[in-house]
Image (tube, rainbow, N blue to C red):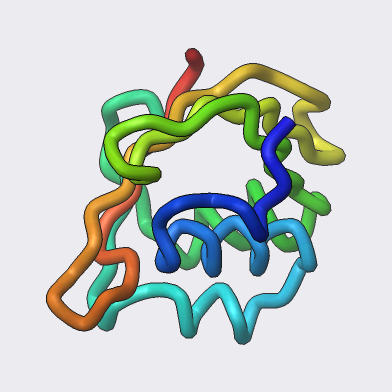
Length: 107
């Protein structure tokens, strides 16, 4: 596993660190205003999805590998709802240096 503090992209590092800490305020700070996301190729409401899949279910990202200058990750993701699964994450970084969009799905 890759320790989140060693992830190459600072915006992705902030995102993963916030998820793993269950810190909604830090998570929101890691996102650009109006950020969007998709899960398994379908756009989702970011606030609803993160509340359900991350914060109310104790989501955790164990990073297996990174590529694309740290903007693509393979993650062992787990939460209290679904258990564990291998997932792929791709991040788009906005001009403000924060995550403007992320896409996740089964790896």
